[in-house]
Image 1 (cartoon, rainbow, N blue to C red):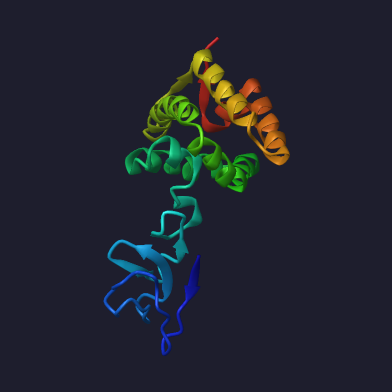
Image 2 (image 1 turned 180 degrees about the vertical axis):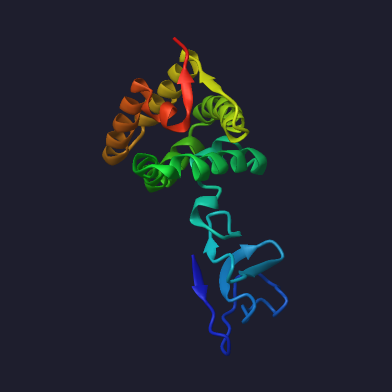
Length: 193
C-alpha cells in the first residue's frame, strides 16, 4: 500500500498534488495515496492504513473493530486506547489479549462492515464499554453488570458465526475469560451479582 521514496529520486503518488507535484520528498518520504489533497506522509506517521491516511501506529488505523463500531469517534477511541495502554499492558495476559485483538482486527472489522445490524449492535455494546473505560481512566470504582457481560458475549457469538476457524478459536478463549470475569478483574472492575 505504501512505498519508501528515495530522497533524490522521489516516486509519484496517485494523488494529483502534494506540495512536490504529487511526489514524495525528504520531509514526506512515504507514499500513501490517494489522500484528498495529497499522498505523502511524514516519517513520524509511517503507517498507511486502509483509509489512505497516515498514522503513527498500526493500532491507530480505523480498521480496528472498535473504530468501525464507533464510526472512528476519536474521543471514544482515545478513551479505549488509554485503558489499553494504562491497564491491559500491565500484565502478560492483558498484553496477550491486546495481541489477539490486533491479530484478528482486520477480519472482525470486515465482518462488522458487511453486516450493518451487527455493526449497530456492536456499537451499542462498545459505547457502554467506553463509559466504563472512562470511569476507569478517571480512577473511579467501576462495576459491570451482568447485562453488559451478556451483551458482550452475544456480540462475540454473532461475530463468531462469520469467523474463520482461527478467529473462532480466539473468540472461544476470550469468551471463557469474560464468563470467568478475568478480563474485568484485570482491568480493576467488579461484576455485579
